[in-house]
Amino acid sequence: MDSSKQQKVCFVTVGATAPFNALALEVLSEPFLEALQRDHYTDLLIQHGQLGEGVFQEFKKQNEAMVKEKYGLDVKGFDFNLKGLKDEILSVKADTKANKAEGLIVSHAGSGTILEVLRLGIPLMVVPNPELLHNHQDELAKQLAVSGYVIHGKLGNLANSVAEAEAFRQHMHEWPPNKNQENNGKGLAGVMEDELGFVD
Image (cartoon, rainbow, N blue to C red; front, side):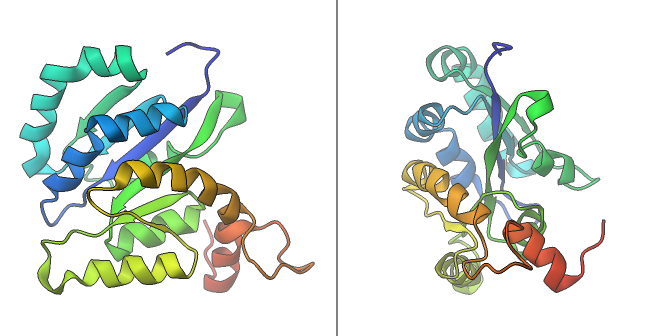
């Protein structure tokens, strides 16, 4: 990576319990990679799960050099991290000392991952897995998006949601909508800390 260029990471997680190869395939598609390039992303990190390993390795074998040359993206992937995903999630946060811009997390709609990301105040696109029983993830994603907490990503349209995420970023950092002297400038993460009593 050019040292003068700000690093900007898109981290994608498919989760640990159910296969979600459709998500892994879509974030490796040319429209999604083009969307990342348009918004100045430099890195795509994918937690693809055990069943997504073949999909990811095949993509890397056939496309790694092209993706770097055409889109300027470093693409890396892994099955799962037994220690959790906190380090990967934090890799998306802005850090002026490290020349990093705030990126984006694209996640399955599991409530544990959603809460962890919201708590850290990082832009989040939630993509329900339609193959799960009763499609309960879709209900959660819709409600969180309507409430202004996340972007509801839909398979087949994730590239367009990347641009939506850039607009959402500004909205998220202005949260809550009813600012007063007590909560001014805290953003969503600060409000969650106050309301839920998180202490790190």
